[in-house]
Length: 287
Ligand code: SAM
Figure 1 (tube, protein in one colour):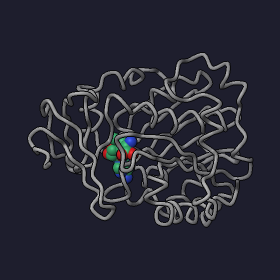
Figure 2 (spheres, protein in one colour):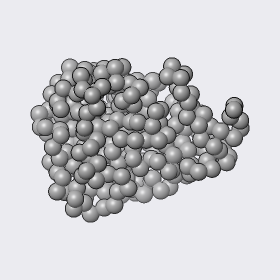
Figure 3 (cartoon, rainbow, N blue to C red):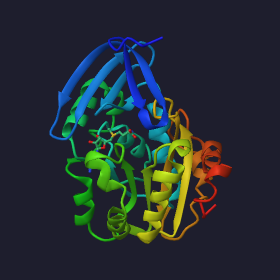
């Protein structure tokens, strides 16, 4: 049965022979910014849908797994994160999770495209609850250049919440970028990067990312897995890197006592996300 393109949003992953579709009620917004095409839809069962350049960025219903697993594991792995930087993340959902951590003194979000944040403020206000937090700074510029200009050792945790590694995000996945990151993060600093689907990208993006992080000087690299129903294959990952400490250890006691609510993340989920499937074992040399 062919899907009616008026009623269904479809994102085909041609080279993988799969596609993901969501049933639509209506299109709410469409704009072409200097960087990308932004669309927002109302779906029948998944709340609102944010699309950039034809790719699903998030839905109201399932964005919590992505935002929680890209923020809390790295923040509970660092001993005491105070200065946090988000590259990308223009929908502001990551900023909101980061600022749930009371010990975080400052979080700067650097997205290249103010259009994404303006669309999120209008159509996803539930993600923008921390935008006016006095600890938050929102900047609109290229994250690759921003990192180059940062003082050495000035960041505790860097979260790269980017689009796929094409267009403006291509520079956020290479060795040159990770060299700049290595300089910008403190000795106990950590980076976490969204690293696509284990089943689709283990021998392409994931292998290259591990190699690039290690060549840039990071001695510890681990990949965590979690579901994101609306991303290609539904099975997603975050790759975390550091300069020495064992990244499989985290502040589990603090997770148990965390003074804020999560919908997915807890200490058992954190441990489980670190488990390495047999088909990934060759690249995860730390675990
Ligand atoms: N969770 C999403 C995913 O994995 O598909 C990503 C969502 S977030 C909206 C991605 C953001 O990265 C976009 O707002 C985009 O503008 C931003 N971005 C892409 N390249 C960038 C760059 N070089 N510097 C800063 N932000 C960038």
